[in-house]
Image (cartoon, rainbow, N blue to C red):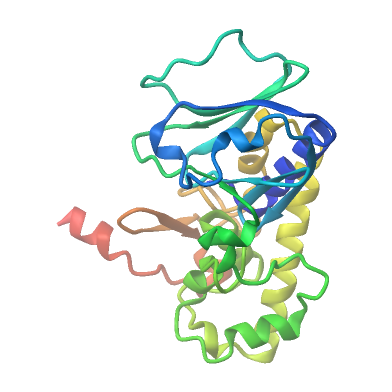
Length: 287
């Protein structure tokens, strides 16, 4: 799933390639992708793009006088830029193409989604806050005013495990499964630690790890072409998606805890005092 660093890189890429150009056609291919109907997609046609913004994991393309085209790529969605779009309209079918946006000079982009769980979402709205997912977002962790005190206030009284708290978009915007693993590894903190029980030193370590991990990931992704961002993300991850590999810090074997629809990865030596976390789902499978 694209998270804050990749979506920020896409925002930067689209800001360079879209702003000042006019949209001539918006072609929906998958029926499931469009989540709003008023204003219609045709309201974007003939409009010049004036800005591209990011709200957590959402991308918002602003047009002169409105409306906005807001996109959430979900777990398996992606944006593919094309200097020259194919001639003729796309044909609906079983392929990954969900929506195409064509510009006046023949360039444009496709929104695609792999797999069978169609969660990619496109909204045409008068204001990004009209999208429920945007309206409920917590603060952006890379905003200038997101300091240690802001994080402390968010976690005060929080009863969930820190892994779940970091992934809650209404608490902090933009962090998903991968970067929460990376942040907790950098902070040397168990993903099962209660979020509201952090000591002052632990809170400082978590804040510094959060800012550094996300900032470094954004910097790595800056200037990378849209088609190479997935590979760039994977290459920069230390523990997420690396079950069975040695930890790059201490050399211990990276472990995994599986859930019904996701998994987390961690280093026992760095994060849990050398003790593996209970993985009830895997234990049931082995019985």
